Amino acid sequence: MQFRLVIVEPHYQINIGYMARIAKNFGVNRLWIVNPKCRYNGKNAIKYSKHAHSLVENARICKSIGEATRGFSIVGTTAIWQKAYSGMSNIYELSNFVSRFGSGKMGRIALIIGRDTTGLTSEEMSGCDAVVYIGASDSYPTLNISHALAILLYALKGNVSKAAAENFGNVYAGNDEIEMLLGLFNRFVESNSGIRKKEMVKRAFRHIVERSGPTKSEIATLLVAFGIKRNRNRKR
Image 1 (cartoon, rainbow, N blue to C red):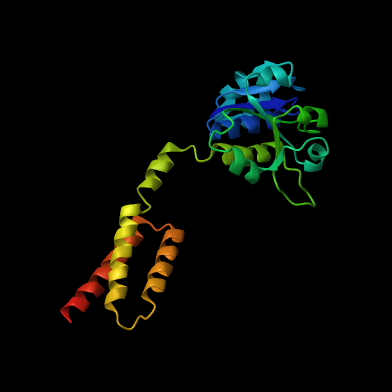
Image 2: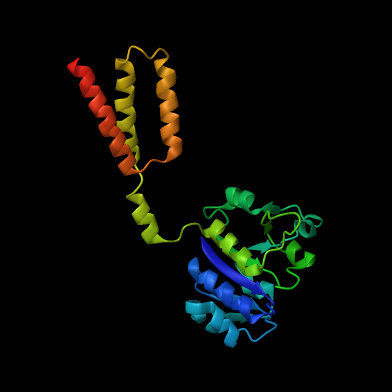
């Protein structure tokens, strides 16, 4: 999925800095800013961007949302879903949007973050291909835009850490290891005359194991336990 982050008319340098930092956290390497209402690369923007200051310094400044999103599917954002719902039908709670359009189904996405004062206008949202909102508390649904951006990027881009993916790939058990455990358990069940509904017991154990996402270490421990039990039964 090609991804572009577009920030519309930001008023505060601190928010630009925070959004740059979050953007870099999730592998976004450039900011597109539409008509900034403050000095977008000022002292505070640089300060709060921390190690993402290059995104602030090299931001692409545009005159309109159309210029910033040309060639991309436009996904707008709002904290007040009613503002978009009254004028369009393609508004989605974030998790629902991801389930429908995640995994690159929309191809080239430009995510539009509205003003840190008033958000996107109804007219701007009506020009989007979709609008998403985060289902926060009804009593206070409006998140700071940098906080909202963190949630949005994690939901849309997922785990972008290659190191974590590789490390956790070595932690959790694979299908072969799980099937080995299930095979030992099934043999244990079959050899135990005290268990009446054997198929039900085997099916319940499979469901529990598959839902739990066991680690390699956990599987190894259970393999030893069932292996010892099986060997004892054989000696008898």
